[in-house]
Image 1 (cartoon, protein in one colour):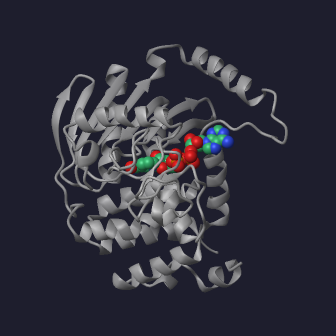
Image 2: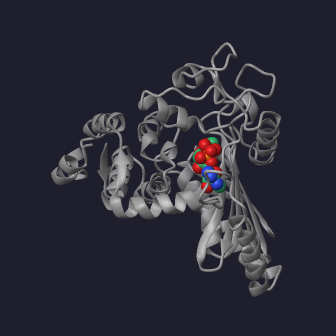
Length: 353
Ligand SMILES: NC(=O)c1ccc[n+]([C@@H]2O[C@H](COP(=O)([O-])OP(=O)(O)OC[C@H]3O[C@@H](n4cnc5c(N)ncnc54)[C@H](O)[C@@H]3O)[C@@H](O)[C@H]2O)c1
C-alpha cells in the first residue's frame, strides 16, 4: 500500500481531468468532490473512478466545455439543465444555488437534468451544513438494482444524503446508497481481489454471489438495502431525480441523462438558533451516551467515522492500493503525466507495507 499526500492527490486528479480535456473550472470542482471522498474513506467514489470518467470524457458522454442553463427560477425552486457537464461540477453549482435560495426564502430546492454521475452525495449536503443549513441530496443512477423479488437491473441504487449542522462540531452526515452497498464497493473488492458478502449482490441469473465481478461488471444486480425498504426508497428518489427533473428514469437512465435534487433548509428561519442547538445537543447526547452493546466502545453519529478518517488521512496521506496505483500509472502515462511527480520517491519507499 502506498500513500499520497492530500495536496498531490488533488493535483493528480486535476491534472488527469484537465489533460483529458475538461475546463480547469470543471476539473478543480470535480477534484474537490473526489478528494473529499478519498479523504473521508469513501474509496468507492474518489480516484478509483478517474479511469471511468476519462473514458466518458473521451466518448463525449461528459462535455469538456458545457454551457449549463437555468430553465426555471421560480421562488424557492430552480431547474438546471447541466448540458452534459461533469456531474460534480453541475452538482456543486446546484447545491450552491439551493443554499442561496434558502438564504432568501428559508428553503431552496434545485432540480437538475442532463448531467452525469456526481460521486459522493454527502459532499453536496455538507456544503449546506457549512452554511448552517440542513442539506438534502439525491441522484438517480444507471439501473444497477433489482426490485424486491426481481432478478434484473431496473432501478439505480439511488443514494440519499442529509447533513445536519451542529454548533462547533462536525455535522451529522447520513450518506447512503439505497442498495446494501454502493457499486463502487464491488469495484474496490474486485481490485483488492476480495470476496463480497452474500447479501450484497445477485449474479446475472439472480443468485446471491460472493464474486464482486459477477455482482457488478459481469451483469449482476445489487441487492436493495433492507430489501423492500431500499427498493421503495430508490423508486421514490427516481421519481424526484428522474421523473420530476425531466432526466432519464428507471431502466432508461444513461450516463448522460442523470438527474439530481438538492435542497437546503435554513434552520434559523424556523427556530431560534440557540434553542435548535440545545435540542440537537440533547438528542445527540442521548444517542452517544446510550448503553453500549457488548464489545462496543463507541456509538458513532452518521458522518463521524468519515470525519475521523478525514483527520487521519489529511495528516498521514491517502492510501492507494497496488492495483489502483497500477491503473493510475497506465492512465497518467496515456495522458502524458508522470506518477513520480505525485508520489515522491521517499513516500513510495517508506510507505510500501
Ligand atoms: N452518485 C451515485 O450515483 C451514487 C450511488 C450510490 C452511492 N453513492 C455514494 O456511495 C457512497 C457509499 O454509500 P454506501 O451506502 O455504500 O455507504 P455505507 O454503507 O458505508 O454507509 C455510509 C453512511 O453510514 C454511516 N455509518 C457507517 N457506519 C456507521 C456506524 N457504525 N454508526 C453510524 N453511522 C455509520 C456513515 O457515516 C455514512 O453516513 C456514498 O457517498 C453515496 O453517496 C453514490
